Length: 70
Image (cartoon, rainbow, N blue to C red; front, side, top):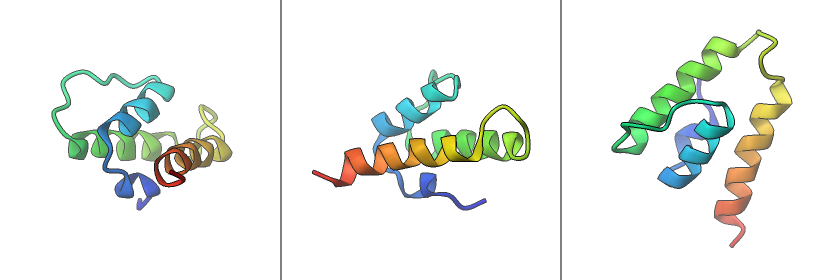
């Protein structure tokens, strides 16, 4: 599953996304582990009723607008 998450390099942005999904942010020393956790989580919820498809897009849009609209 390739997502825009792969393009995020700012650890703070990844923390914000993980927190928004209720995922633990403890113990990560770099962005790679966080991206792996997010990808797995998104794959696990795909097709479930936990999150709507639009919610993932909204979070990704928030991060990219915040990061690249400066």
